[in-house]
Image (cartoon, rainbow, N blue to C red):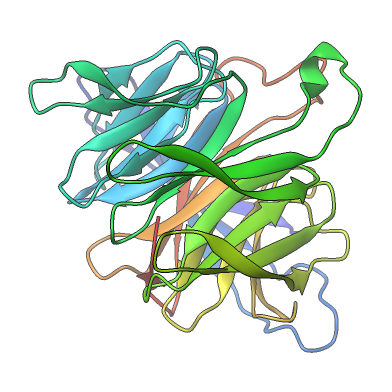
Amino acid sequence: MALIIQANRRELSRSDRRSFVDVEMLAPCQQSEGEMTRMNEVWTLLTGRGLVESPRWHGDRLYFSDWSAGEVVAVDLAGHSEVFAHVESLPLCTAWLPDGRLVIVSSPNGRLLRREPDGSLVTYADLGQPGWNDIVVDGRGNAYVNRAGFNPMAGEAFKPGLVALVTVDGSVRQVADDIAFPNGMAVTPDNATLIVADSYRHSLVAFDIGADGGLSNRRVWAELGEGTPDGICLDAQGAVWYADVPNQRCVCVAEGGTVLQTVGLDRGCFACALGGPDGTTLFMVAAEWRGMSEMVPPGTGRVLATQVDVPGAGWP
């Protein structure tokens, strides 16, 4: 487990909430053979949030969801934040369309919402049933949305989940099934491969993307051992960063499962995104996690960041 040593703290001027930057030096986690060892400097961009998820870098800001508050929040690199959209949904995940508009998963009513330039929300697609989770939109405008097959918070019996495709004309069809618990997704820069985090099977699963957006050639992209992947993102060398809630870390793996880098945290990491001016800032949304029965204690959600060597690529 990483040793976290607080080195410095400085106050930032904020209009909407008190914030500070924690600069934390993390000693390398215990690593298996083949892992790359390095020190990571992690700082806190925003504090005082709830269950934080779905980070997306867009323009010059990071957008993320606070599931506890039902808010999509934008924060800049100085820590200044504003509520960008309000949707009462759990889960509450987002993606950017190629035209620069945001789509939001409204899980309870099974809809995709699109935020218009004036801030209004309109229905983008009807998914037909509740319970949808994560979303990624590729460079052609095709949206992939996944859904668990059961509600663990309601004590329902296990049933594998699925992935649906929403095309640019709003049509919806199922394109993958038998994913034990689908979580984060990413699409490669060439729009050729979709990678899905299967939390329950501790693996990343890949599919070829066809010309019509359909999926084929299912395969295990990486076995993660004890890793429990949640939100994911891709870098320019084809590696995947995945957030790991129970193990309180963010991990970079190559295809096949070789661990390239690990960033240890002091709370559960729910999702990650690469962004910043040159794409080499790794943003991590994290909060204290006590299991499905207790969820996240209020105020423990944070947006964290660290610098990495390889910039982000693909979507999200």
